[in-house]
Length: 109
Image 1 (tube, rainbow, N blue to C red):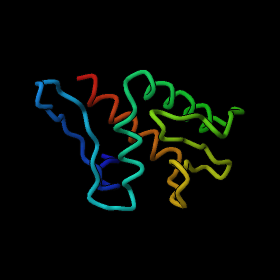
Image 2 (cartoon, one colour):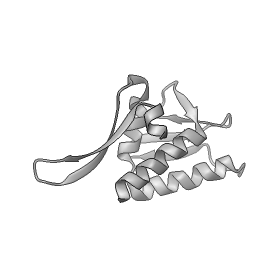
Image 3 (cartoon, helix red, strand yellow):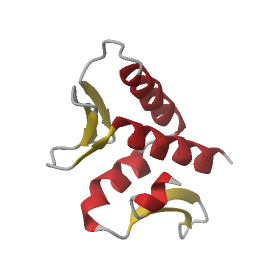
Image 4 (cartoon, rainbow, N blue to C red):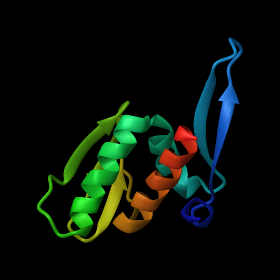
């Protein structure tokens, strides 16, 4: 699984009021922004990001600045990578797409 390669784990956290929230955490500080962005992405935002990443992988023209989810930004670079927020860390589009697909499966099952 892609999340294992990036040291990211998914869990469901129960609040004091009993509500359950999906959460992505990392064991490598270099991937903290990635895990945070994933946590901010609900089902709809995750699906929209996956669709846009699929377009980029297919060579379709897309807007580089995809947008943001709860303040966490996603930029799809022309060099085949994505950048989360304004860090110097970039990962391949395919890797991030797979991370989001794993997250979508986690939060919908």
